[in-house]
Image 1 (tube, one colour):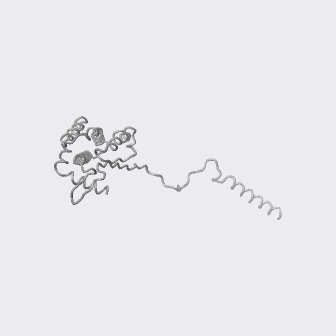
Image 2 (cartoon, helix red, strand yellow; image 1 turned 135 degrees about the vertical axis):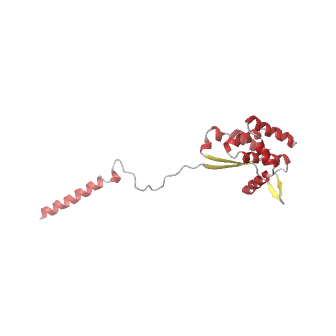
Image 3 (tube, one colour; image 1 turned 90 degrees about the horizontal axis):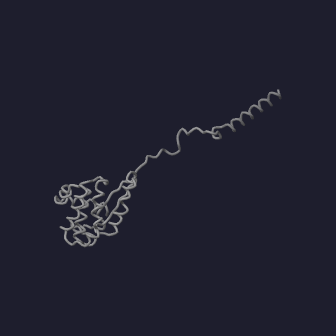
Length: 187
């Protein structure tokens, strides 16, 4: 009888050691967990909103020389870029005031807001915004809205943008709704 008890004890000990050394947690190729601890992540785009002032040399430099890299390096495949041409504008008693109180700055903000409204896809409107901003140093010297209009129309023409949707937005007063939406989204 003692022989069978010793044999049974040896069997239990051997089985326990075998289970310990050959358990799944110590095996060479572990099986994947049934329920992973973290769910798989869906790739999402990063939202990038750029608030800028027209007639600002620093903003123009950033747009023309650096922001363009979003498109030249395919960052646009992982970034949702949104341009907002209205920094530091205020509405006081129903009147829109620009940062420096310049009518030309407000005019360009209106035009660029209409460009974005008329061509909502950022890959579409960015080249036109960039072209207008590239003329910043020249536009700073201009003191008449007619001259500024000639600059943005030249950019639109050279890039193949019909100017009619921009004109419609600007002349119909629709731009005021667009600007109010932008201003209140910023404030």
